[in-house]
Image 1 (cartoon, helix red, strand yellow):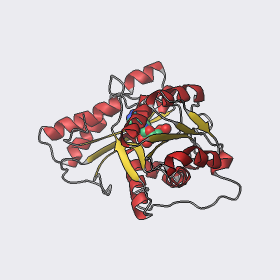
Image 2 (image 1 turned 90 degrees about the vertical axis):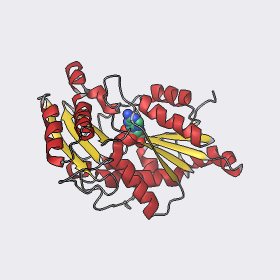
Image 3 (image 1 turned 120 degrees about the vertical axis):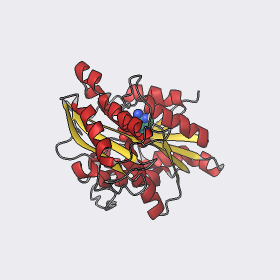
Length: 289
Ligand code: AMP
């Protein structure tokens, strides 16, 4: 296992990758906010399959947190993260300070109207502008050939793919499957906010998506009863404060309010205690179970 190199500046990052780039090696990139789990490791492992040298970043991006969100409390576990990255095959970790990413006077941001204003964007105004801005910057800093993102954050991955296309960024975007705990809960850095009781209740989010998928597979094609079924499943956990449960087109995120079809997106977000949890599935496809 090759040792992990930690770099904190863009200059050091570029230097660390100079030889690989000159010798024509393919550079893979997995951006993260740290507090890493097996889902992150799976992205790194995927990156090792599609590139020669894998770079990851850990940066808790202030631009994507709202004023009342968990920026100050976001979990930080750098030592464990480095061990996980090294074991997964990552060779270079970019670990910048906020001032390295956003030096004094920084003010250019990426806006993607429409797609970024629905689902999570509606309850988190400015969130996706912050995500796209930092991802664009990180892509420019690392200059990877391929970058890997998780389907768990479906809307985020879709927006990034659109930005890459709209700006002709020379990078291939790969979207990887969601890793889950044994009871179906999507792995997330925020799961550690859950109390023992909340942790037991949390898989209801996934169960709602699965109940809708099962009804779809059994022949239900109308959006309203599918949504009612999912909402009823989530309501069995009174502590869940549902943010949204929606059926949308997986390409343009337009709402499905009449009939649904195979591959349509089920997207859900809910607050459970101090954790905001999200999940999704694609109806009637192998992605859903
Ligand atoms: P984050 O550190 O939460 O910003 O996530 C960094 C990357 O890991 C994003 O591309 C996420 O979509 C992805 N990711 C987060 N959770 C999972 C998971 N359970 N399975 C696969 N990928 C994930």
